[in-house]
Image (cartoon, rainbow, N blue to C red):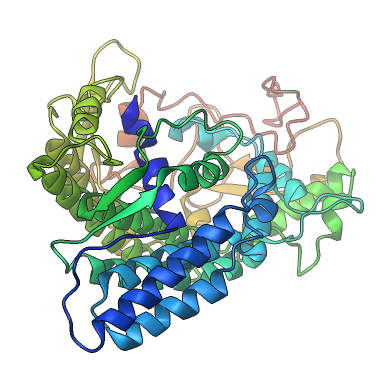
Length: 486
């Protein structure tokens, strides 16, 4: 399916090797500016010839002389600020600089290590899941022994994002916006120079990428709009990633993560829950900025589709062809949730996603597993427009009993409670949520009872058993007559 390789193909634009542009509009010194742009393209082409697809990214991209190329593009823009070819080259060079940055690569490696093996549960199941997930992620973020990632804390990763990635993406988008002002923008990239970088960007599991069997690939505004949208999507993800405090330290130290003592593990989990800044908002404006990027990305995708549909030139050398849009259209209905069931076109899909980001959207599924579908209102914009200050505040009411941390016979270290922190007992609900709407993301839930009923959970079954360290091996601990778990 060519549709899934569109972004990889567009990323091939990064090489910006030897670019051949159309007649440019003279403003200052068009001819000299054009020469500088072409010289910069040759520098990139020479660097790309040394790319080794079989090597790790930090080694594969090490041969690129990005500083020299960027300097030449800057000189070209000084000679002619409207030089769309130079703006395109600057955008590509900025993006390549991010990919080749060693701090960025270390941050990505660390994030992969932290998230390794993390399973995603349903929203209801997650409410009752063990806090041991926090401990496991923390151990992966700060593993014992000498072999550690170059970046240890989530805040280190967030710092790299804020210092290296977000500014670079912003500069690249600024240049792409300048390119989009040129309705006649068109350049060509040597296909043989694309392949090594495409393989590096695809990764070992990316599979073969099908590029047109032509000497040069045409790049026009269809690809530029698509690249613009992809960069905005990446920036939106990074803005969300840097919105909340994700550090797992214990009072500024990570030594406690080395412990094998269950008692000390419980001390750590209680600290994360009650005293730490974990999952608290650290940058109030980032979610709303992410929403703006997401909405603009949808607009850019729409402009790309419109431009490609309107093309009347041969499609053999295009990276994104008209037939790719038809292939993507055929994929829209495959395994789609019901709220996308009425979508038949790419434009319709973009409109539906825009609606999901802007207003409450009904989602129909069998949420209570009774064989009939129910309608759930989902309002993502509630979180993006007014992000919660502390995500831990949405956990069910609960209470820690540190005096029981050394008790290996009973799992009564943490119990579910009512709003007054009284332990739940027989005849009580399985848990009580402080805010069943989760900050407005599910606006139809005004009470705990409505939430439980909607998802088919009993209203008076007694509390769910809680085993913070999963000491029961996944088996529900038994309730004794005293109300303690054993």
